[in-house]
Amino acid sequence: MPNDRSALARSAAQLAAVLLVAVGALHALWAAGSTWPFDDQEGLARTVVNVPASEMPSAALTLVISFLTWIAALLLLGRAGWWRMGMPSWVFTLGTWGVAAVLFGRALLGVQSIGVDSTHGRLDLAIYSPLCLLLAALAAVVAAWGKRAPASRPSALRSSAPPS
Image (cartoon, rainbow, N blue to C red; front, top):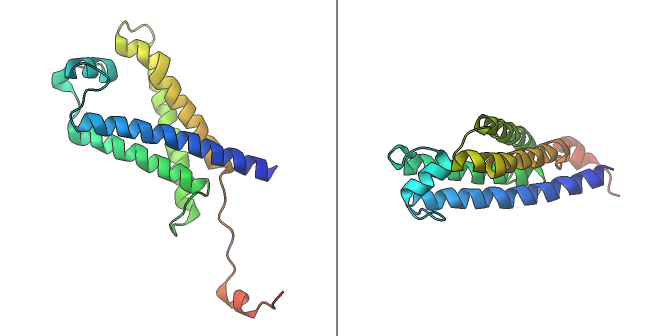
């Protein structure tokens, strides 16, 4: 069963990472001044953040969100064992649980959109919150069942171990 769980965690990490990288890329585009897939800044602001264009978050803040989603993707991949870069496994475990908690919290914020008659409100209930809930669930799977770093033996034991 542990191998099945580890394989599930690896697949969950891959799917979540692809989605997070895509969300991060979209935010990077917006930070660079693009309004894609909307016609103008007003459409982007009203649909994504539910504010007038004059109150749109700054490019710097949008870029921070982009980087945070990419870091989240790296944490998930690290927890699943795709890469470690010599970092201790607790960084990935704690970070992945943090990603799951933040995304779950964002999914719950969508409840505020119930009854809101706006494009943003409808999209929040139909796309934004369900996507965050899916990502939170994937992150929780990775956090719970991700690859654990092998326990290392003290160097004294390694050097005195008889050859096999």
